[in-house]
Length: 360
Length: 259
Image (cartoon, rainbow over all chains, first blue to last red; front, side):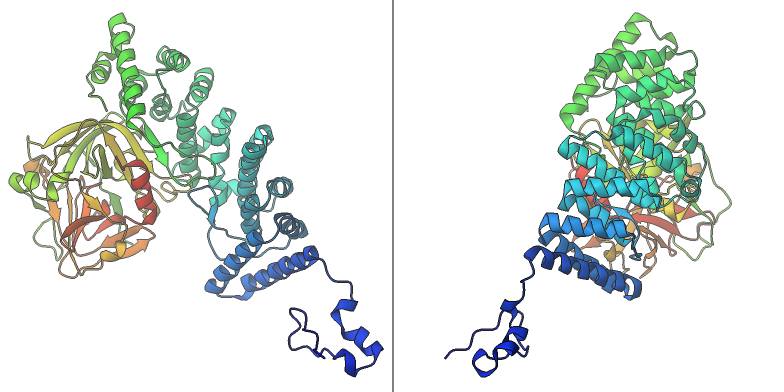
């Protein structure tokens, strides 16, 4: 008589052959007699064990061991059933356990992190790849706590991503949360990498109403806040030129202390757009703007600039020749019109400079 | 710690009092017009003249595509004056002669929210590690070929011939008005040292203000490759600093300066 094969995973266990033992003993040892664990609970157990193991490694392991443990966890979470993985991660995040990874918070080219500084941030970063709704839920929970600005940065990014994917509307919440973030003295006084990267959130949603706070940060000389604020405002002007120009025209005190930088924000204007042309002409007509600032603006129209980096949400479009040519033609046409109409007699030199530019 | 400084130079500003021969370190030398304008890779490097606010400055850049050049970020932007304007790029300039002259159409600064360029003052290692930029210019450059680059800073190991090029507007300015190409090379086997991330230094040769944004080449396998960009020097001329081309910089170049 053939012996039954041991079920998978039972190799080496003392399974007693049926024909050689009494019935009671067989009942105690044969796996088929137990209620079999569901695939779901087995997956959950695997993930829970993996999370516990990673926590242990992060607390005691070497840098290489930590990296390897996180890589294995990522692989496992992306391989398991998304709903089960998401539920397990949500439960872990809700429980509040955490450990530092020994790495720095670092944003990659797609907005995903290339390195997370804590396990919770690693999981928050990974959740959008597993399940959008779980990511949204975990992010809302994270924003209800004040554990770290880095968590908030990833949580806000997740909500913005969820908006794109599912059509939810988080712009008002994101604006409010960004406002809370930059009003937190503890985070402002020692800005972390995630705190600074989160300046991309208002840029993404064109929250021009935060510009006064950004302008205030821009005046904090030689600080990380200054750099982040200047990059944020410049990028916002690149991606949302009309909104930024209209805001600055309506709020003349904003960036008045850094007028030559303010001029840059108007150089992003696409003068093929009548509304943007009108905003530029409003700016040129402002009596509070100096001749020096307006000259800087006109000169800057020839070669607007952009900050380029790996950011949480936004991406600066590549310059292509067709777009550069279209904008060049519109700029030269506007300059010619301004000159021939005698509208800006004090700016003949910069207007001639624009008119004389070679095509891109 | 020795004081480092950006190599941006206000036009007409002259630093005096440093002997170029009495130091145990190499100093830049002048490249003649024939070589600057006819020999690879010299003919791809040019002089940039621009305004930052209302003041004129000069820096250097290198043609790496049909309308693209590589330079450093601090010639393109300052926290006080914002973006530079009125850029003129004179390729292989030698006094009043150049291969071709171009104005810019777009500036790209490789620097993000967390770039820390202002975190510890502009002249800081943190700033230098992000000190990379590029400009798109108008018209087609009159060069036989474009400069090549490599995201392989490991080649800056002292085993290959290296040189940095640019347009010095300080030590040589009294004689050249900053309009001639300069070249400076490390002493034999003088290798580069990583200081902070992508910011490296070399203490066997100098570059001078105005050479900012110029290329640092290595000659490997019969090819000149840009491995770094000149970004800093010591105020006492005891070394020089470079933003090396790493993978991130390579991605930036491929994405935004590939034309």
